[in-house]
Image 1 (tube, helix red, strand yellow):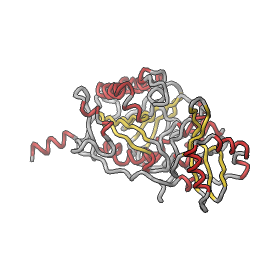
Image 2 (tube, one colour):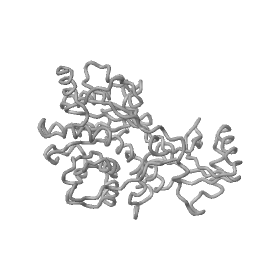
Image 3 (cartoon, helix red, strand yellow):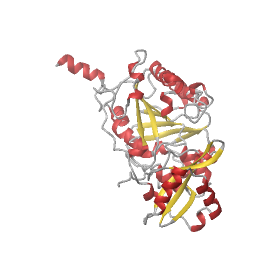
Image 4 (cartoon, rainbow, N blue to C red):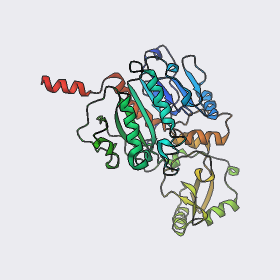
Length: 394
């Protein structure tokens, strides 16, 4: 099975100045930058409010004279702070108020409302200076938050700024063995022509509501079919850990004792096999009792920020009559986000788990940028205007 390669930042060189430039809001540890630069863009400006993430960002990329990292609240960023001639602005604004695991306060919530700080910057940049392409990234719960009204509101705001909007979903599982579906909104000042069939794999039925809303200006770019979802691969990315890195017997037995009968039976079958396999597990609370739930496949569950015990994944090694359990390592987090070469030296474990659990999978960004964002920036996607002229002249 082929796993997407890990990526490092594109080196600077004489050709960097000629590349289309991008800004990343809510940059985190810079995984969006890795993906965009892999596709041929040059990220010249970044912003994030978390000092621990900035530390990781600068520890990996270094401090480059051609790049500006502006720390702090996006609400304090001004349009005048932005570099000129930007081709793309990317915003992975917080998902806390949009996620099914959160409070569902939507775009009015204290964290997800930072979306308005981003669009305020675009507004202040003015019609002639704002980038021709913007990209929003968030959890798929964005599509259903407040009955779909939050997504419609975001598109309406992009429309106000002159952008037509496309909406699609892409799962990291198509590139790495991690289940991580995400929603993307692509705004274009000069939108491409519509794909003839709206409900492709990238725009399933549950995501079609914005396209049928006459109050919204939308488009549907024709894109290639992404790779099929992986069905295995976690075992290939597991880090080899010393014996003392695994849980002691008492803790392991408590883990096993919390499993439901169905999960215990499944684990026993794997234990009886001659080969060793790996699974991931989450800790849940069921009927007021803490329990562990193990994924049935060789795929990781969605990585999350390590702010609580239930958000951390454990790795289960099973086979040859034995079972071992431990927490997932920082390197495994990095590998599952398509960034196995990321600089992890001298970092705290929870800092790394927090940084990667809150990030965007690198090959997802790279695929989207290569097939959509960069062609849109360069004008190589057929636009509606060109299509209308072709019909008239035809």
